[in-house]
Length: 118
Length: 107
Image (cartoon, rainbow over all chains, first blue to last red):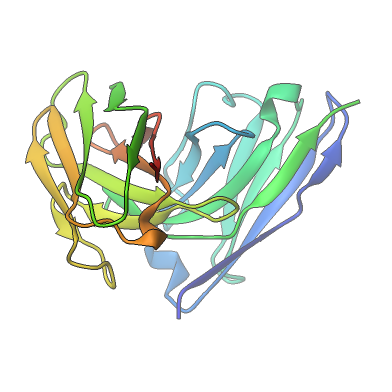
């Protein structure tokens, strides 16, 4: 059974940093592109970042470019999102999601809540 | 590519047919997916590649369209279908974009 479990969320002050993790199981992690998608309270879904299975291709949404860094450790079946220079507008539930061939995301984690507030 | 969904809210009764629309600002071929999201839950994949039902999705859900205009149809609403539905395009990989969502609520 495919499982994605996020962790690392919490309350952080503006300008602070946080690192999210996503533990994957039930599939060959290294074969899949993985994504982070976020959802601010009461709003829709926003794609944040993606990384290919081998880690060689990485992309970011414009709102996080230069502040967030995505990475993965295939030996540990884990995906990460390092978030620096956090702003109030980064407050959201962050989901990790498995991508299928650049077309859609078939499995999602339960989400990790990040609150940026003083 | 910008996705527009209509209507923003659809108020229907159980047993009725729901028709949700998603329009892209330029062609996305058939690279469009639909997701269902209930409060406090992660999105769930319903439809991929415009018309392919995901594993375990009931046959009352169907998707159609190509290019810029797409439709998600729920043939007969069940109580568990009242939720928010998002479309997502992926023709400009790796830049996924989502539509703003359509909320299907109880009339």
